[in-house]
Structures are given as C-alpha cells and as structure tokens.
Image (cartoon, rainbow, N blue to C red; front, side, top):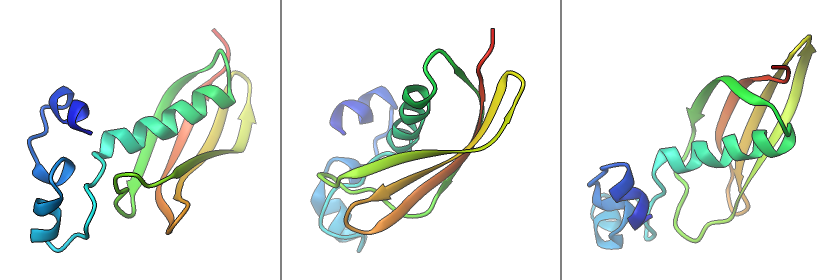
Length: 110
C-alpha cells in the first residue's frame, strides 16, 4: 500500500499507519486504497474474458478492505449481445463478506 500511496499521490495516513486508523476509530489494520479494490475487480474481468476490454464500469464501495485481508473478485455474466458482455462483479472479504461490487460492459470483438 505504501507504493500505491505514492503512485496515487494519496497522502491519507490510514493506508500506511495503523495508529492513524486507530485514531479515526476505523479498526487496527491499515486500509486499502479504493483504486486497489477496483483493480482487483478489473483484473478478474480481464482474466475471465481473455482478449476483451472493459468498455464501462460502475463501482460501489460497501466497506473497507484491510491490510493482510484476503479478498476474492468474482465476475458474473448478466447478458450477452453481439460483441458485448454485461457483467456484475463482487469483491468479497473471506472474513467479512461483500466489500465492493460493480457492473461492467466488456467488449469482446474488435
């Protein structure tokens, strides 16, 4: 998360300092940056549909993802049309359940 904080130009200490997380009453582990969680879901889509690309994606942040927490991104096909796949994606914590969700449209043809 320290590298992501630099890359994202995100100085919020909750991503790298447990004391800052505790001071804000948000628990006792650092908190993932939101774009990391989106990247997990995007990577799951791109692995699920090789050769495709993401046309659009709308994400909902439902809870934090904490340092050292295992999360699983699962895409589901909602509809298939010529050259497009409409999907929903869930990002679930193995410890706590659903933490993020998204809807996406994948382009499958050139």
